[in-house]
Length: 158
Image (cartoon, rainbow, N blue to C red; front, side, top):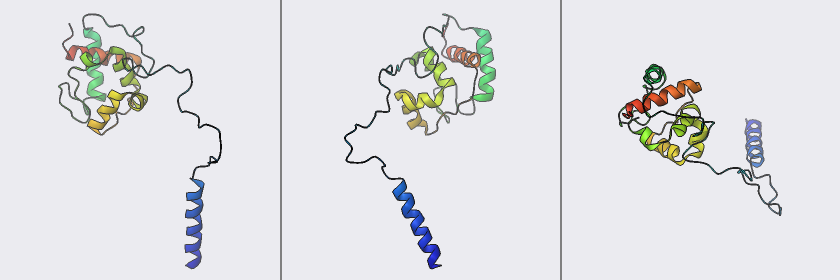
């Protein structure tokens, strides 16, 4: 029993020591920043992802066919956590989202939620409010575009 205690103590001490700061505290080398030099600043109107104002074009009126497709997708992937009203369920309600966010931000969030939550102050605020991280639903670009049209229809876009 005494040997087990000794071995356990040695393992714990070695683990704690091994997890410590391995950088020499007397080193004169600066600690490298996690941000890459020359990297563009985060664009909060676009979010983090491949969608930009150039590759997300929305018409003045809602595409009814895409919105109907978005309804089908939402019924399977979204409505267990989101309501079409402003009321929070697990995630925030959808009402007014297209008035508050750009189309590219919405599509980047739908298709790329984890990097968005990690970088975007608005997404982080939603996480603090909802306390649940939106899972990546692995939606295609077309699915995300259809959901965007559903959101636009929900917000009474022409």
